[in-house]
Length: 332
Image 1: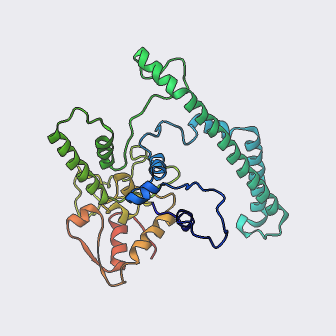
Image 2: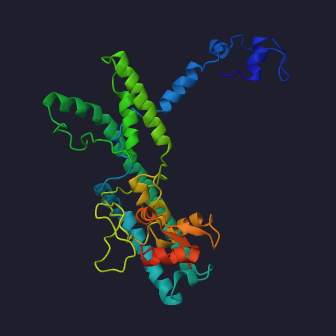
């Protein structure tokens, strides 16, 4: 807690360059924390408010499937969508492709205005529906939990809008160990058990420092919802044999990054992430390939190939290998 120059001048009764007197004689600063070299109470309280261990994990952050369908079927959204589609068809009949239309074309200008209005309408409706859903959740969640405890069930039968508490699924398993060691009560533990607990907490924190968290996206896909890999076809001319118990088969999806797949610091969801388009995957792979010169030897990042020690003599051979074996095609 370091006091600013204005507070120091006020304490030592120094004349300020801006004003020649002090309107307030009260020092509005934690002088005791500054003297002891500790953080002030305000700083500690601010950090505590930023902690997310007590945040309600069941609070809705996105619209449910029913609300999303209601949003898509709203009268104004459907009307604007049809108008935009009609203008698109007219532009395609006139220029074959919308992007070939000149900027001064009245149809293109009208389409831009309709698309902007459609985007605003969807955004405003989505925000209002989400705000209403969150208010309903926080208004009824605590009451529903208490009623569920009284009746011995997982959720109160009178409120169908509140979902039962769900177990948090951590992308990195070590996070659950840190939360367990941090939040569980320790009143009944002996000194030796407290010592072992502190050692486990330190080891968990050291272990998570060696992991790489995947970039947060707007709508993260769960590992069980989208299969990240394909089973290689029988009789395919594979150079390397795949272990049946391996989580990463040789034949991958064409929108997977081979370098992310071989990054053991990432979680399983981050390693098996599928990009929306192959071009996005190619951009990510090219960023990794910038580290290598055209003739540098490159080890295949795939776990099976890396375990076999497969090294490719150059970027061209590497791209040919991942295209023929892993079915991931990069730019030539």
